[in-house]
Image (cartoon, rainbow, N blue to C red; front, side, top):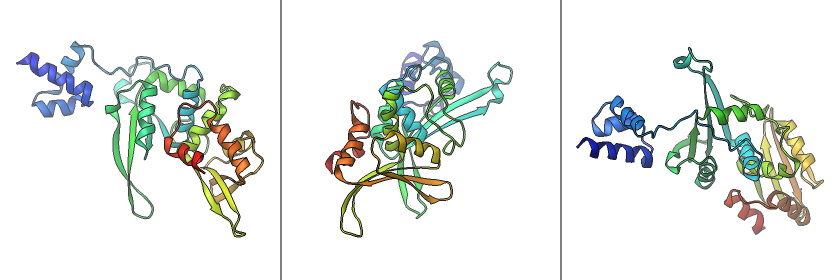
Length: 267
């Protein structure tokens, strides 16, 4: 009976992502019992095992770094349980979006099982509820790498910057990641009944948008102040310029948010 129970607990731990607290409650055993089984079979998810996906700049690492810059969070907090160790901080990165597709791709990039994806509801200023998918991940090595590259911990929106180590030929992938988090695209008619194609990225970081403005190879953009400490990079332009922006963002692209790409290529 014990072997059967151990197998079931391990199966739920691996396939359903249940922690030891939920496993103990589900099977009416103690947390220590569950921990011993998981340790005995060497199944423990180890936050100290290096995850090296940001060690080298690639299309994927540049894209997901841009996505973390826009819609991610990076926390570094004191851990009282580790006060006697050399490193007394816990790290966690978090990505939260309405699109399950891109959260799944982020999990694949980190080699994480998709069962770790959770969902929650967020209330808009108008009182409407929207469903968000999120992934939380604690890996000390990866978080140290992100910190070295330049991703700020805590409230990062107004101070995040382009990594100095990022090769120029991968910049478009980072901008595409940022756009998939905080960008818009569409067509509208101005007051003169002229049809314009519109591409935009919003941010609390004006310097970052100024860098994007210089980097995107179209001289038709401008930065608009929406309110204090909130800005919008806008391109309202004719189709030729719009196609140039699209080709810049999606040239050689293999990772992107399908929903936004489809809009870009349908107009």
